[in-house]
Amino acid sequence: MKDKVVIITGGSSGIGKALAEVFGKNGSKILITGRNKSDIDLAVADLKQKGISVECFQSDVSVEDDNKKMATEALRLFGKIDVLINNAGITMRALFEEVDLSVVKKVMDINFFGVLYATQACLPEIIKNKGSVVGISSIAGFRGLPARTGYSASKFALNGFLEVLRTEMLYRNIHVLTACPGFTTSNIRNRALTKDGSRQGESPRDEEKMMSAEVCAQHIYDATVKRKNFVILTTQGKAAVWINKLFPSLADKLVYKSFSKEHASPLK
Image (cartoon, rainbow, N blue to C red; front, side, top):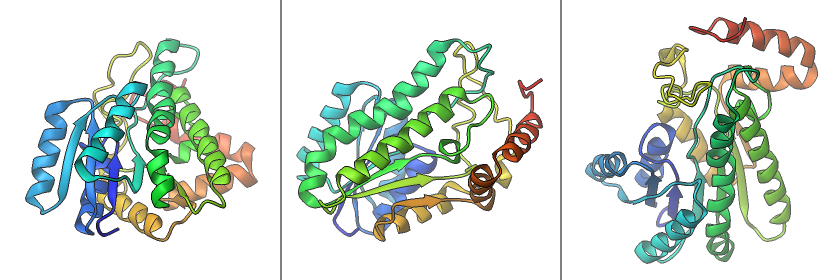
């Protein structure tokens, strides 16, 4: 990845910032994006202190024109685009019967349509450079999670899109990686939307028992270097995917039991 130009959406914190650090430490030139200017400025300052070549661009992935401007800015700064990491994402927690559907739409706009916009904006350069498109999906893209209608739907859709893109690019030497973390320490659950669209504010799960963002990012970096098609992370995550595939009825019960134990779970 030395001297490769890497765009990371949602790069101001969590897995996105950890990805910026690991790619940057291996010689990549980084452009991180985010909606909050102060957050991405702070992230850039911290990363630059670690010797990483990084710039930032304020944008909202759910706005198509912002993604076009992002690609233009990367070319202005670095002259090319080699890798796009579609990391920006949001989650939610509410039963489907109770959720305002505008919440589901917002999650889909960011997690799914944001990937389409960013990928289409960067794809001509990635094709030219025979680079990589990375989608940060989730175990929730293989196994539906209760009270996460929008999140699971967006990740299932993302997995389908990446599969299509991988097939379309099969003989053009373009790498497409579907990266599926399990539960990973980040602020995504604190910022999760509730049934009326307000922020959850507090993670309902024990963050200290999760894979760290740094370890997760290293796995994704390695998979990108090796041009793998998939990386599925954590023992729990891998078990969930296989149990759901082989024993779907059992998976329903196990997943329900696990999520019903969350703090203030909406499951009855």
